[in-house]
Image (cartoon, rainbow, N blue to C red; front, side, top):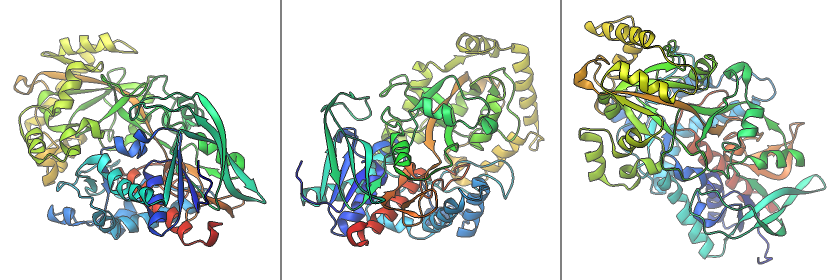
Length: 557
């Protein structure tokens, strides 16, 4: 590797790393980007994402009659975050206020100028727990990127690759950082091991065979290495039993195997402050991927609100644990059953209208920016092709014409207790009776009616209410839902300039962090809960802050 001086070393070539490198290179700085994977993995987890972006008071919202504002969005964010730690939540709260302001002002224009576009229908994710001041989005804010995750990556990757060709950026792939070089109290470089070359495809687990050592120096080191999403041991060690209940025995992994969280401990060992490590974001609607790319590969259902949600014993989850409303509260309710999975019971009409699968590869129409295919897929009868493929081939699906056949099929794949047909039938019939009138005492049916008042949901995401046992809407479908690992909400504590802080609250000279390793800003900008569409945005906002800070810092020290 050439020995020429660089102004910054970026550890991690995911989205936050690309954004930081983009900002540095456009300011004329020379950057070295290290990653333990090969070039095929440029963009990291963002490539696999659905590409959702949390934005506030946009033209897309206004065209749909959505009245949003910074004040309402901040109310939702703070109500969801629940910041309550006197020391650890100081910087996360400041990051939250700054990020929501970014989402309400600069964010759309910043991305638009880079060439990113969003689809016209704004999604309504994490609808909350039923309180105006509590968790959840009061209005739809989930802007879907036209091109999904690969497009979010592309708009930063292309200028970075141009800077690489111009000599301002160099990549060192298969370089695993094992330590930070600290001299006189400042970070001055990194050291680690070179891993054996590989041509493994994106996302595929790669060899950890070592071929040599390295030590590299720069006046600034920016850590953008991601979280702990595939490190099940570390997830269980940090699992907040008092908030969620016991850690699951079975996980499916929403991220590739290289998402190991190693840099968190490495930075802490060097003297950085790691905060809120017990805060994390895992999904309750995980499926075993019938066509996996990485080990234990899971896919998340992004559900509409109509499926009947049962715990592992076959008992309906209490309100407001409805699909798509309050992810972590539903997690707690599921684990309270003593088991680590749950069930959706629904109809063909519901799956056709309400099931989407998270991930760029599960949405080839939008990912490929194919307007004709998108219109055909979303408007034609039948579920989208990837959803039908899971229904037909997925290990977690049961399809039947009658409820007794459905329950018998559920019992064949249950990891826990055998389900009682009479118990489930009583709940389904009681729910169905509530549909005889236009009004109801069933809070889930009220929520469905509210959702259908929003045009975007009525047209594209929420099925017309109907009886689950109405054969006109059959067949019946049951889905076994697993806990899907995904995001780290805590991380390295940083100030608003993305400078990593030491335990005494002072900046750690030479060290910066962005993205998931920094809790998307401050060591936990989301607090206890996320509003969705916020992870990519957090990588962009914090990566931008890190790049701009180092770019304007003399000698970056």
